Image 1 (tube, rainbow, N blue to C red):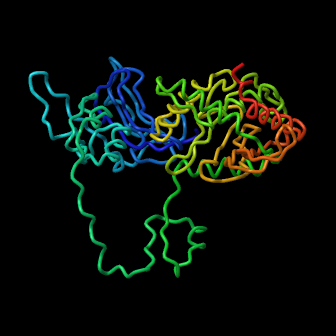
Image 2 (cartoon, helix red, strand yellow):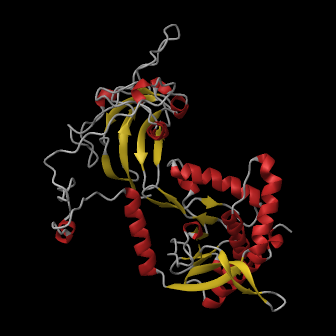
Image 3 (cartoon, rainbow, N blue to C red):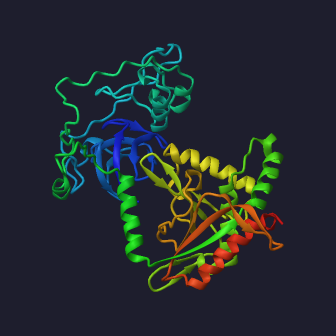
Length: 421
C-alpha cells in the first residue's frame, strides 16, 4: 500500500479517545480498514479532511494531545498536510445511553451532517438485507452500529423506484458526472451513449501492477493436460468423511495443495527476481485469485504444502468470505510465493494468467471436461481432463525448471493419495 482514502472521521476535534477507540475509516485499494487510537488523549487537530483521496502512507492526519498537553495550542497550519478549512466534516457520535434510561428503538447515532455512525461491515450487511440504519440501535462505542446490531434487525419495506425524467430521450448520451482527464475526453465519442466513472483505488492498483508485470517480466507459458478422475474420486471420499464436521473440500482446495507440494519439489520456481539477487523461498505460500466486486484479490494459503485438504478448505472459506466483505488484513493478501487462478468454474477451458509481481510463478486452471484419453493399458477411453498453464518469469525461472514444476503438479493431481501419504 502506497496511499489510501480517508473515507470518514468518527471523531472530531476536542473529542477524548482511549487506546483502541476507532477514530477513522481508511479505504485501501483492497479493503476498508478501521484506524484505531494507539493512546489516550484529546483530538487537538484534524489535518486531513474526510473524503480526501490519495493520502500517502506516513502522512500526519491528526494530532493527539496527551495528558498535561494543551490541545488548543496545536499549530493550525502544519506543512503540506493541512486540509482546506471548509473541507473537514467531523463526525459527532451520540453519547452512549445511561444504564437507567432505555435506548430509543428507532434512532441510530448520527453526526451533525446526518451521517449514521456504523462500521463498514454493518453498512454492507444492512445494504444486502435492505435495512435502514436509522432504525437500528447501536451497541458499539458511543452508540456506533456494528454487524451484530444489523443482523438482528428487520428489513425495511422497499421503496418504489423513481420514474425517469420525461426529458431524457431514449438512447441519449448522459453528460459525464466526473471531471475527466484530457486523455479521457479525447477518447469520447459523443455519438454513442456512455457514462464516465472514476477508477477505484483497487482498479488503479490492478492496472499498475499488471502493466508492471507485463512490461518487466518476460513471460514464458507451459501447458499440460491433467487427468482428474482419481482426484475427483478421492474428493468424494474425503467429503463423505468430513460431512459431519460441515467441511467441504473443493477441487481448487486440492489443486492449491498440489501446487504447494510441487513448489517444494521444484524450489527453482518458488522464487522472486530482485534485480541483482534471487530470493529463494523454503515454504510454499500460495496466493489464490478471488474475484470480488470491482476487482480481484489474492488471499494467501500459508504453507500450502504442509496443510491438510480440510484445513485448506477452512482457510479458503474464511479468507474468501472476508475478502468479499473487504475485511482482510494486509498481511493476508500481501506476499505469497506463487499464485493459482482457477477459471474452470466459469467454463474457461484454457488461459494464460499474468504473473502476480514480485512472484515468478502463477498456475492457470481451466475447466475439467470429458475427453478422449489413452488409458494406462494403452486402450482409448474417456477421462475427466483439465488443462493447466503455468506462467513463469523467465528472468528467474528457466523453461526446463518450469516444465519440471508442471510435471510435478500433474503427478500430484493424477496420484492424489501421494499428497496425504
